[in-house]
Image (cartoon, rainbow, N blue to C red):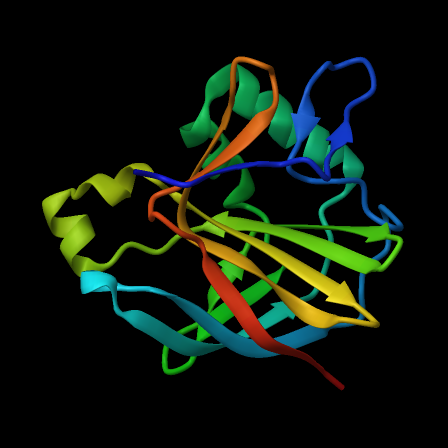
Length: 193
């Protein structure tokens, strides 16, 4: 049983008839001065046990509207492998769990909403030694997907799909499919000054 996330806070591309997981940025060409968020990732681990680790998310740039449209076209016409290859050339920051080497994040989109901002982040997931060696099923889920909500009144939080598939569904909407039953939660998120 895999959880699926239908992205609803998304941008309909003009004339393309497709929806993007990369909503329009607040200022498409703006490059943030290094934004750093820390917190805890909490999720269900092996055996149904709660697992939590600290994380650091560093954002050094946004994905432009033009690049987001290009990535959506690649996904639609050539599939996930081609999308993975295309975004691998991008570096918009890093994501690291405590005690691990950081991994490049490949796309960052941010949009303003009435309560604050929503960041949508996609990057190539790293495979464990076991997955790489034995080709386990989760290898078919090559992305990590993060939604981070930054609201002035309620604080910050979000979700993380450590192993995700990204594809167009029959309604021509991009769908994010999580390998696990439940996505991990981003808790106690703080912006570093």
